[in-house]
Length: 287
Length: 222
Image 1 (tube, one colour):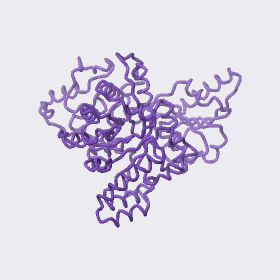
Image 2: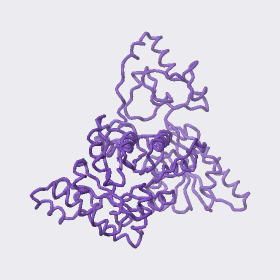
Image 3: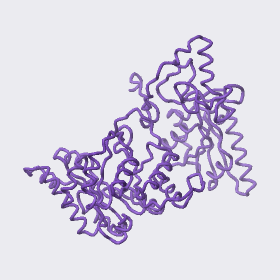
Image 4: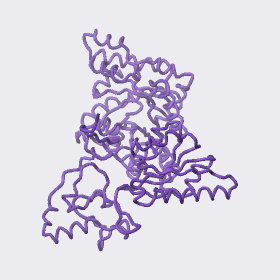
């Protein structure tokens, strides 16, 4: 069942994020993907996360589609101008990729090609309108297409912000909705109460809001997140639980599994697992 | 210097359409030299705006002032006593001016009356051309004093593209192919071999790609 249909009928959609390889060896990606085929609604393929050069999501998503997995291809505007973005979107659709997630993309300073020139010809909201235009059969120049795609596209949403920042994020979400975004995948959520607090602002269950469950690979990682990413709301309690565990890997898997169960129980339309390099652990989380 | 063009009159009128009294402030820096935002241009634009609004039956009061430089807080400070007596302030400086003004006087509205275009100079009376893209790492010495970053449409570093013809760029016959000039000069000076050197991919961090830039002179910082 396609992701859109699954969300429409309210069947809990488990998404997993899988980074394409930095190189041409796809064996590990395909090995994990094949184990997950029957367990996930779709694989989310990032667009060079943290500005680290690796196989493009177009190539990786097409490979995964060819193995029978549905994909959500992420697209950011950092590395391509409007011609390249639209061209890749058309290639994607023709190659079987119908789900797109627009992401902002981190600055090149975070990545491994610091000297590169960023493109940023258009921004994510303009891309959303461009995708809508492509679906209506026209490119950004207004020229008619030979066959129009029918993308189901979404964007990011950060529910952990507060005050004015949250207001701006909610306004951005509204603009994306107006542009035709059909789903929103959140930044990592460690405390579901953050989502419940939004209940008077958003119908979080009807919105196709898909919270992200990030795997905590170590106590150090958890501490780093707590210190540097306050909008992820990672509690001391969670860090202590990981600290006390004799088998931290198993505990991390268990924490992710429980988080998925909580979101499913709470009535969300789905959740996305971000393995943070632990792709091979995904089958254990999704037992 | 920084080269700018005045914005279309309709755009400026739209900016100040709700105003009854504005200050039009010019700059004695680059925009005076390129004849777009100095005393004379301030007087001309002020008159045009007054006449246009008078015709509409909604007179616009326009006061005129020209600062030594709008990119220097010392001169921006000269508006301190009067800036709030207007519905808005229209700046004829480059894009730096209205930003420095709005940083100094956050409770006032500032509008740009010019479009800031490039860094360059006058090639003949009334014609200015781009020479520098401000990439932050000057390499013109490799190209006999000509900058392919700013002056080649594709910023090519290893020679002309296939679109170069008769010394002109494929983008427009009004644009000279800088690579035609570079190659000719190298040939004249018998240094064509220089162009065999493979240049490493450019480090764009010193350009805008490292984020908004800042220049610090330690010896001047108090």
